[in-house]
Image 1: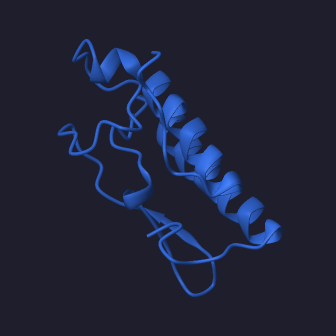
Image 2: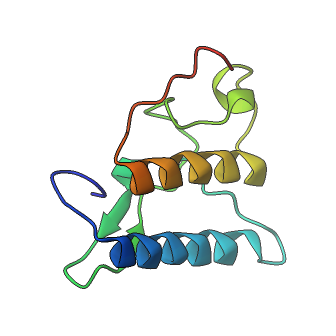
Length: 106
């Protein structure tokens, strides 16, 4: 899992960020775009060569911390926009090491 007791150098951070963007772009660029719907740190796996794998594409949301407000508050269906929201929060955590997100102001 990303960030769990592991230090990423800036070069590794950029590589991981790029791979996440490529994976999400692949899902969103199909003839019928596919939202992941459950992007969170726990669902981004990193192997020994710093390659990422997206895990747990589901409609069921087990953690609402990284969900877009329209999904967590209004219980709207998963969307590409929701994936991009979650991606931004994942990037924030990846580059700052801060995994706490204050969503009280949303």
